[in-house]
Amino acid sequence: MSEDNPPADHVISNNNDSGIPIEENIKSRSTWLRLLFMIVFYVLATVTSAVLSVVVVLGFFWVLFTGEKNRQLQQAGQVIAAYLYEIIRYLTFNTEDKPFPFGNELPSANAKD
Image (cartoon, one colour):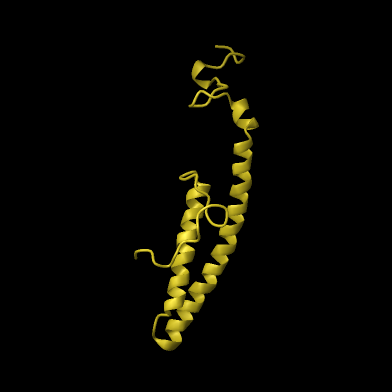
């Protein structure tokens, strides 16, 4: 076999698994709009993670100095965790539903433990 002709299993096809040519995917406005939203949600996830870090540290010191859990910090942690979960699901293509503020409402602290 010559180097000019690779084996058939190494030939790159212009079609993806759905049969749509790659060129259509590249030119698709919805794909590029999705990328824009993904960048925005990635930034939001980064900021939200920083806020979660503050909540975690405050919660630890609250318990350290009072011996009790702070209910408001627990609720804030629950909301932040649920929100990050929604963002991660969107970023990993597990849902098309956009998280808050572009789609769903902000999760509540009343989620099941």
